Length: 388
Length: 249
Ligand SMILES: Cc1cc2nc3c(=O)[nH]c(=O)nc-3n(C[C@H](O)[C@H](O)[C@H](O)COP(=O)(O)OP(=O)(O)OC[C@H]3O[C@@H](n4cnc5c(N)ncnc54)[C@H](O)[C@@H]3O)c2cc1C
Ligand SMILES: Cc1cc2nc3c(=O)[nH]c(=O)nc-3n(C[C@H](O)[C@H](O)[C@H](O)COP(=O)(O)OP(=O)(O)OC[C@H]3O[C@@H](n4cnc5c(N)ncnc54)[C@H](O)[C@@H]3O)c2cc1C
Image 1 (cartoon, protein in one colour):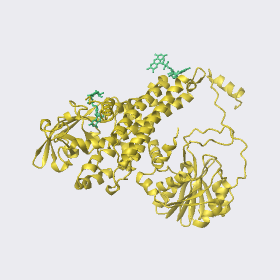
Image 2: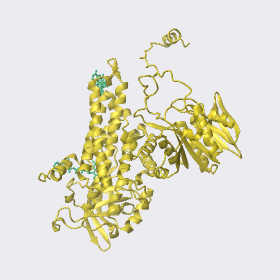
Image 3: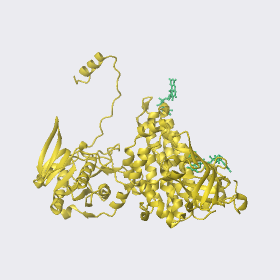
């Protein structure tokens, strides 16, 4: 099931990632899943091999590669049966710092991030009471001399326990004093090594899949004012500019998942014999797999298109969001087909199908849910009245 | 010490190969290709010798189509210093490969050639031995350990019934077995560096070698499909079946 494109496109990187992932087969991920444990060994191997610094510019010690290379890396991880969620954000969260940080901030943090000595893979935006409505977030950062004092709460801040730094979005100007509801928010870089126990508390949330995510409590946390990224009050825009990259990378992970499901389902359907022939010889079994394959390829084209636009510097908000939506739908359809093809065995842990099924379901909800993508397309592409 | 490592582009070991309908060979359309695993072991061994300060330069050479460049780049990303592609289209038999390697050896004067004991596509297991014969060099085949000394190299060989260690005078040919080492995967920075390493291209004509095949493939067939098994009721029945039906006892 090799497509010509997939081979030509970052083929050397893909091949090397496949080899790395071969060292982390199904039983590795299964054991972690059962114990709800962080894939520390896998993340260390990816870090040591330089993959998580793919997008950091060369002047800061990264590989300075285009977004499509990072997409290829994440796709291959997921296609191998693994999962990149434990560390994918180390690739792109630094984008906020890179695009909007001062020269001094970049020189201080980026080389350490590129080398993997500092982990910046926590992104604190979502709050329990505001949800998708980011403009309504309630965490407040109040200026007090040369520090900001932060009070509030975040939820679903993933990897916070496995990160040294966090990009935090907080309100610095009260909402009613702003022209727009999304004004008055600012981005702070929180050094969690100093902050833990001094105003910062993390509480893990157990989830349907093995995903290190937390509730974050901010209680009089003092953040040096020099850690403000960009201008005060423009934080929402800064966070938004990073979202296209995030959407495209998550979409690539979904494509990798979909390929794994389609390949796994096909292999099983070729081998499994009931009623005297391989189940894959029945159209009732092969058509859904073929359908899932076609949907995956269509979504893959949108992911490539979004990445192409992103790399050329053109606006790509609609394409990045559509890519994420279509890829997440394609991966879940493929997951469902793969499970059905396996009959009862799909439910047994040792086939990895049920684990991947749970894992890939997330991406229709996070980092943005399907409805909000549709609302965005309706408003910004179709010119329909804003619905949210 | 300079090391030459031949690397072959073959069907990836994970691919379930399919025979062409006319039986003329294996269908290679849209199939994933990779470096022959035994050659990866050879590249790894050369890199380890360089890391130990025993080798100074590693040259990877591939004989094959334009895409064999990718295989050379893989070797460069692992740590080889430069590459040579001998561009050929179509099947090249071991003797022709050995002759071309002999010509490259004449140009490059390596002290050691480390190569796979066989390629996983045709399983010939001939090229290393032929090259040693053509050059009149010593050979240590099926190596599971390689220890260079002063002007010599000790090679531990996996032979039937155990291990044999031979001491070879350099220059020499070593062919690798599976247990020699576990090849590394390339890091991202090294993949990037590999793109800038020199890769020269030459041809059989330039090396003065006639690559016309001397063998004719008569047929290629898939292994017979596995028949469904039977359950036996007892050890006695099993022994009976092995004796009377399978004829193996
Ligand atoms: C495992 C996991 C990891 C996460 N990691 C992070 C992280 O690292 N950092 C971070 O900041 N966030 C993270 N999130 C949060 C994630 O981005 C949000 O869960 C997501 O944006 C949805 O927000 P919500 O859960 O509050 O849902 P809500 O906003 O409450 O929405 C609930 C449902 O209602 C729908 N809905 C809401 N408003 C409308 C409307 N106007 N029209 C139509 N439908 C609507 C939504 O589409 C959704 O289906 C994570 C979430 C999960 C589950
Ligand atoms: C949690 C769990 C509990 C269970 N409990 C019990 C129990 O208590 N007792 C018991 O006896 N069994 C039990 N089962 C077994 C269950 O009944 C079988 O898993 C189910 O009947 C499917 O059989 P299979 O898993 O062998 O799938 P297969 O028969 O291998 O089928 C695999 C897939 O191929 C499809 N397929 C097969 N043949 C054709 C065809 N000719 N045309 C089209 N599609 C085809 C099937 O629909 C399925 O999607 C349980 C299974 C599970 C997962």
